[in-house]
Image (cartoon, rainbow, N blue to C red; front, side, top):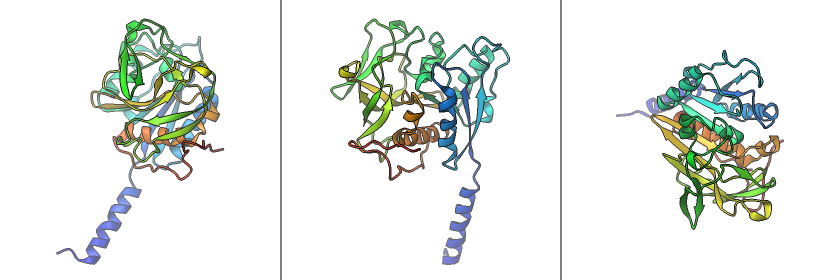
Length: 289
């Protein structure tokens, strides 16, 4: 029979083992981007580390036009890779290393313009599900969007990737049961950002968690476009958000929470990070300084 003292001891030991648990090791890749990675990378690092769950190393590539041949990341040291990179091709050993890493069970996180990268790299496009620009067209895969509450895979010809004017927009949760979006309001207002639309790609093993309406009045597609999704590859997990254009976009509590929870899910398959009290509502955006 379990005695009360023994139950208390087991509980204390359990809590102690949790607090002593090894941090989730993450690596953030930057160094080239058509966006201001020098402003956004420090926030991407900060939002993870402030949870107390992550340690984050930063791997900064050579500048455009410099020698990329020695750039490399030992992916095996990390539970999750965060890409804030959109630039020149990585060396082949690094490319193959990432594919092997994810398929073998590693986590990958794609933020905003990272999905513009490597349009001619088929395995990368399979990892990220959808991408924009980078020479993408109908050969890259269909457009994917929501219409009448259904996922549409549209093979019509055309380039991949566009956006209208920056503005705050509503994010609509489509899968409230997924660990990343569980507990979120069905709709919440995201701070000023670029709303990526007309993304296309293989979209295999892809689950759309949330969408946003790309309003033609803002120069958008007139469709509900994917804003949060996941992809599974082998034993690995990919979390992808096209939100996050600038530092003011990354300060949105909706983005912060989604990014933290998505990264934890990509690394571990579970989410323990709570929805904070200042999470935005459908009527009110919420940002942190």
